[in-house]
Image (cartoon, rainbow, N blue to C red; front, side):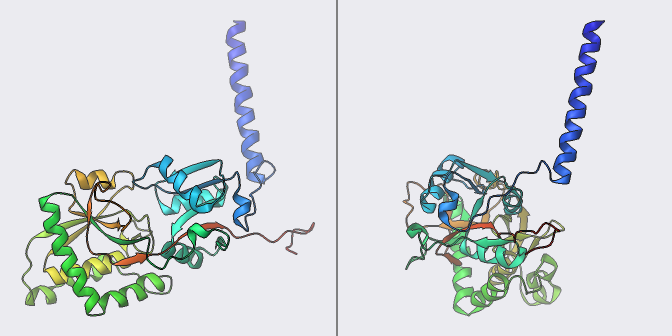
Length: 310
């Protein structure tokens, strides 16, 4: 009987402790103070993070720590860019990396993030040549090679007639102020286009939403923005139906390798990657990436004793 009451008392104690902890967190008395980061030195011994990549967490941690030029304490991977931003806001990490277009977009879109000054981080200085180009990734086999050639030909045409430049300006550089482009806006799916063009075959293209505004998934869980507009142009050039598939970041490349999709929209073509290192082929690039940037929380103004900001 004593044992029974002892166990009951222990359960009640743990329940009370949990409730007290929740109240403290809610009121802020037990909330962790967020670290203020204004320069790279502030990240010495801190935690950094970013969206999951095919490199894996260990290699990613080493790579981005080397770009930062500071010794960090831990690296955390996130399934999506939104998750990474939330991790930064709550203090799970003190900085997250992003490609240049994504970092610039995030600062404009969220309002509570800053780009870390990289003046003393030579490894992240803007290069004369891009680190890589965003491109569609396909399987490294005969079928993938054929798909790559078709997609590359379409991208070359879209670039040469000025359409690519317009899409980049509207949906990447000015993504925050431009009306979103969704699947229902695709010209290639309209009766007017199909009346004058005979469609042949289809391609399944995967997106993850991990690199906004290059590829985005809106609040309704639908693909939006540059990726949809670009794939619409490709569909028009190829006279081929394009089906956009939303994938998890963790399984996107395995879905490609398993033949579940024909291509991934936001693959990366790097001139520094040897053929032996590649697990996939890439098309002609559609957007150059010169620089990784680190996003940090915007420093908050100190509050006075009466609760107002100084």
